[in-house]
Structure formats: structure tokens, C-alpha cells
Image (cartoon, rainbow, N blue to C red):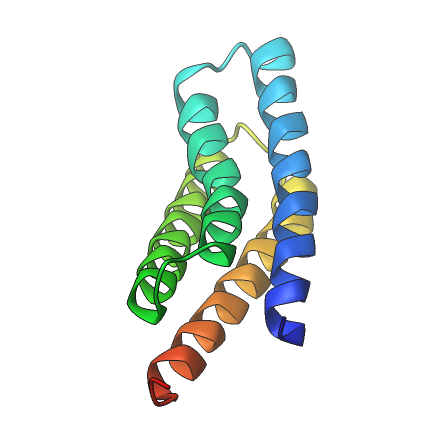
Length: 121
């Protein structure tokens, strides 16, 4: 297992836990259910897709799963920005979580680029 892939696996689990807690807060404290459900779905899907990629049937399958994880990370970033811009999370909360999803996105893009550039053995 490559170091980047190990790092993203750990980061995605930690991030998913943060997302679960944030969604619980949004439900309990802000009585916000629609956006939080979208955030919960996309924010936890990232790690699930990375796990699926671990058991990919081929290089193409691996790339496909990582690509979908990247799309979910981008969507998660959108929901976090929307929550911030709509006043449902504070500047402090936004600045705490936004760099984390940015980093996850960058790692996933790097894994994709590396995987696509390697020759099939």
C-alpha cells in the first residue's frame, strides 16, 4: 500500500467522524435537516469509496472509484461552503473544516494523476 493511499484512508475516516458530528449539531442545534443530510451523504461517501478502491478488480476500477471519491469530496466542499454562506456554521467552524476537505481533495487528485500515469502491468 502506498503512503498517499494510507494517509487518505486515515484522513477520510477522521473527516467522516467530523461530518457525522457536524450533522448531528446541525440537526440538534440548528434544526437543519436537508443540507445536513446532503453533507452527511457526500462527506461519508468519500471514505467508503476509498475503501472500495482498496478492493478494486482492476486498475480502471481503482481509478473510477477514486474519481468518484474526488467528486464526492468536491460536493462536500460545496455543502460546507453553502452552510457557511447561509449562516448555519460560523467562520470559525468553516475555517476549521474547510482546509481539511481541501487537503483530502488534493490527495485524491494526486492519487488519480499518479494512477493514470503508471503503465498497466
